Length: 443
Image (cartoon, rainbow, N blue to C red; front, side, top):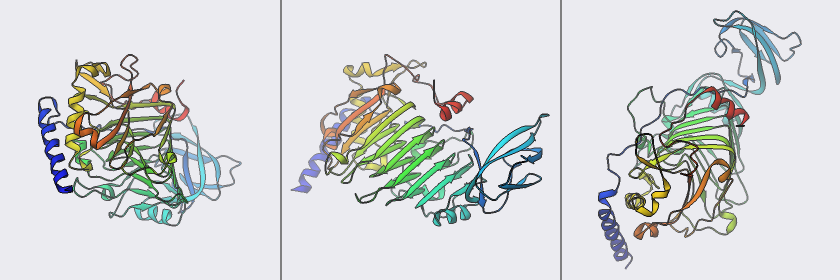
């Protein structure tokens, strides 16, 4: 009997898909990766007390490096600094190409200076705080488990492609995992699933089988992991962050180029994820910017996720009628059915008010935040607090027919077409104003 019901559903799905062929997404429609370097305004430049000396000329090219007279926690030979204790250190030098001297504050940290992948992982495995002093590239495919570490990234790029890389049939690992009662803090970290070259012809769908850059999942109410991202850039993977039964704080951070939602929080049988996002930017994902999803039944109301939006939260994720998607290809056989039906539903006149005209003359709908229930989770009562304060409005989006038996709840938060805060064809621009706002907020 179960097989017969399943076949009926499959047939219905196929018929439903065929019915919307005229208005559904072309199979060749793809999402281009937005490439180019991102310059970060650092909350500070850090040097650790362990792991050897650091040549400041790498980060601050120049000459005539001197320490402040009252400095007692560091020594300096030429441009090479050795930190012996925590605390601020004033270094005066003449920047390359300049004629006047500049005072640079270096933050001494009781952490380990690392300049290669193995030293970086070794520090984390010892629950120490790595202080990154060079670009790092992962070796091997094993995820890095963080038990209790603060990672001071100094804006150097940490590429974890060998870990997260996969395909639709063989999904990659998570770059960093946090579980149990573990605590992970990332400060000024630039984490990439893949390092694209400027102008490289690539599409995000190539990363649909990748893992997450950071995964904090928990199935035990007696423990709870936490992740904090301060002034970070996460880019080029499937999801950037995935949390379940965990706490997450994101502040002054950019997430971009995701083959799924950029940030995902899942409802399950344990206490729901509690997520706060403040003064941050999300850009360019195949699905939506942020998703509150669920696959398994919730044990009680505490199992649903809570998303708190504060300050400014910019989401650059407008979709045309034929590129709007709720699910990436990795979620199963029904993805094409649901996405085709979503696009078909958006083609109806009653949803015209959801669209805005772009500078190219095309119509776009904003897929900012989605609340979705599938599988055994028959309703998703997750909360989104502060949406209106960041320019997002709640829009009902009941799914038709077979899609409603797969995605039971579908709520969309997007930019109000009557109050456009980000133009449909606009792309995130890296500029000094944005960098200042990520650190200090927007007036």
